[in-house]
Image (cartoon, rainbow, N blue to C red; front, side):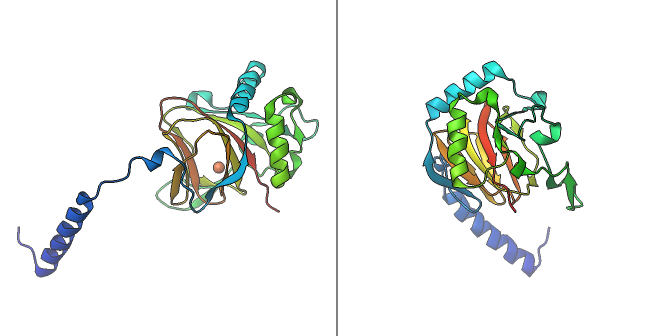
Length: 223
Ligand SMILES: [Fe+2]
């Protein structure tokens, strides 16, 4: 194989770059913690993680996760439209945009949800710590649908964007559970922290661990 001058220069540059990159070892510790970045921030407010887990245990004695459980996705709602007892499949998901193939074109999925309509806390959970959490969140900003979302092991969401940001309160997690907004990715520890995720950007959540991940997720409706 003969190389021209330009190809020889490219090889030489790449060889030097590879030598440099291989001499540096990637950090493998910080990924087990939270790192803020564009679109993912941690709030000051903090909840009691033990009480969150107790609330989850009690809630699951009363209801089950709904959704494509076999695909690793489960949810139940903590808020509803006043008096509306039966939620629709769309209520558990809602409008989003996604790019699904090599056309790179955006497509819309599902139907718009009026987040501002979800003003009532589901009475089934009135006595649980979830209500305190929800009441506290409503002091921060208008809060829309508030759900408890479960993600099975080796599972990820679609790569999509939503009409509004979300607040996440991790309840059960593992270091392989990551949240990605555009080019920023971080683990969200379940220590009572509340995280702002700007899900108006492209995002996904994935669980690369070997146990279930459960978050309380509240929409931050946009006018
Ligand atoms: Fe989303």
